[in-house]
Length: 214
Image 1 (cartoon, rainbow, N blue to C red):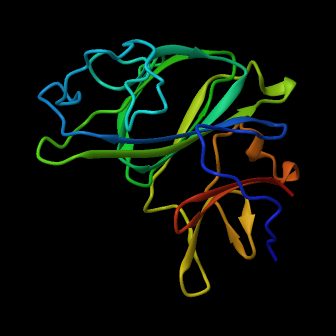
Image 2 (cartoon, rainbow, N blue to C red; image 1 turned 180 degrees about the vertical axis):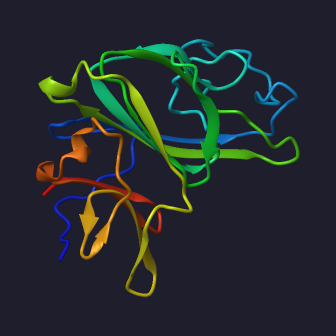
């Protein structure tokens, strides 16, 4: 039986406990897109390259044409990117690239280090582009910090969705819930070792993220 330990407002960054480094929550009500997949609105007055004004309905983050996070390094930890609405374009120094979103999850174990880019293309030119995602950072144990980088896609069609009562559903990203098990994570992930008892799941409605060490 699951019990609620605490409840907090969905802010930009959450406090977490080891091995969770932090959880970032992005919810941006982007306008219609233009032919370059950027916002079809003026960018005058925005601090392009470092646009994090939380008073705005949407941010460019480190992007200058398309919102998002251009090429940057990761090492010694892993990221779990849970995209509930909108899309992410990923590319990395290993030559991998792709687009995912609308319920998909990307699990990337950086290991000894890699460069990657995460951009948020505004694909719709005839309607607003809503982006809603969570990104969890997990500190890798010492023995895994210099493993080869690896990423795994958890496509939304494959993620277990569990009915809880008449109005709630739970998306099982990592770990177990009652008799249900999540898809296997990246091979050198903290969650790959069953003895670590790590859970990540999202409960609807209004997407509450649970990070847990059983």
